[in-house]
Image: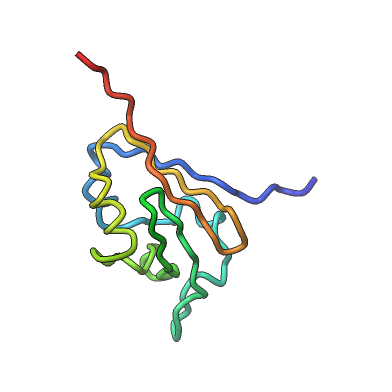
Length: 116
């Protein structure tokens, strides 16, 4: 029986991982979501991936093999822009879904807040 490729990952934001997630996305635990050629080699960057965000912008990134993180962490585009504009909170969930060969959707599922 063939193993189905991973197509979606949910990352729960906690008080412990909030600071790190605001700055970096470590992909070690769900590396199977991405094509292997997206990882950098010792000599060159990996083949770029496209992330289409729920905020209406997209960015390209490869995966830094040494850190197992997305490389594009710019405050003006990329992962850090997305986390900054969303204002992550413990209990929120980051959803990454493969929608094409090298295309991924990136969205935030906010924690359901209890109203007074």
